[in-house]
Image 1 (tube, rainbow, N blue to C red):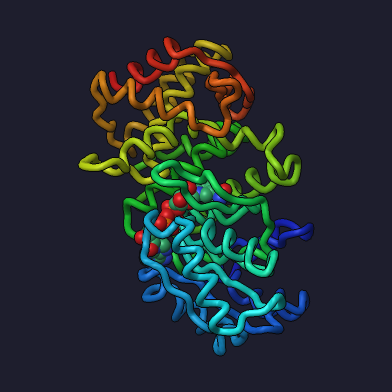
Image 2: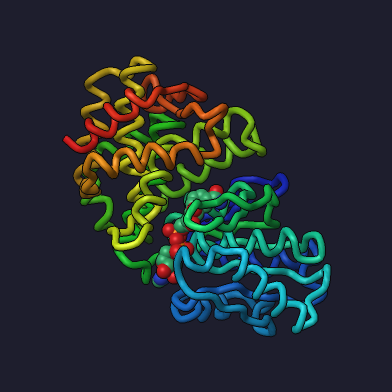
Length: 367
Ligand SMILES: NC(=O)c1ccc[n+]([C@@H]2O[C@H](COP(=O)([O-])OP(=O)(O)OC[C@H]3O[C@@H](n4cnc5c(N)ncnc54)[C@H](O)[C@@H]3O)[C@@H](O)[C@H]2O)c1
């Protein structure tokens, strides 16, 4: 594979994207004097098997690192698992100059970032995202968290990493459903942040894009474009008091649906699958409240429906979903606030929608 790595920023967090990004890990560690009290690599079971050998093969700094392993998936994003990791690090003598390297998807980077932010009042960490969700979204922007019960991302900090290394090497072993889930965030970046990216995506049908090898130059260009949009939003508004909220497009109903789907004896949705459903609902609300033209609404629904199957929801479930919206962090005084779009790429933030409008949007999704 041709080496194409490039750096997106030189501010608080350098982000390397493209083939060969891993080759920059050692230089960043050296130049920032990281890991003087040892290096710890956080992996889950799958990334230990598929991704750790690749990292060890490309970074000499990692050869003496100690490995911290958690179970794969959302079950590990808890305070109990974080506490277990803090205890492991204490036992292994990790100090304030230790470095934590998060090698995994969004669960590993959210959890590892959270662990690093609180251990000895904060130690440095790097993100090496291995899922498409991690590469396009979770690993960028310094949001760290664990879940509280079944409610996602309720406890956490803004705590920036010292570097992000986005290498397509890892995506070769990512299961297809996770690749699709991650692609939802690329579509989100396009719809909420850049009409040019939306036009580039629309030149290809979603199933065709998803069957491309992740190392394909077009696929890589999509990742880099999405990363740039996310990064610009983070630079403008690190603490999400304004502009960064554009990245929440599709997430209000998406998060509620994801939480709902994780309940007992339900069909669990991946984060991106839920966001895809949320984007269809948010596009409908965009037509109602922000003047999104019918033609764009149709385009968005058709595009997403080709890649994401509809989630079955009955009347009772819709009511339960409305209850979950109350927990969304974007709400104020109990009213649901949405990020909508007036055109693809033109976001409108903080739009209040009432329960009747939300219910109509869910009906539109289910049609
Ligand atoms: N902090 C943020 O800004 C932010 C943004 C978006 C999402 N998130 C969070 O990210 C999480 C979802 O991320 P995710 O979809 O990456 O989930 P994940 O971390 O659970 O990874 C998905 C699955 O793929 C496996 N995997 C990862 N990389 C692999 C590889 N290269 N080869 C084989 N298997 C691999 C993992 O073990 C896991 O089973 C959610 O918890 C979500 O809340 C955070």
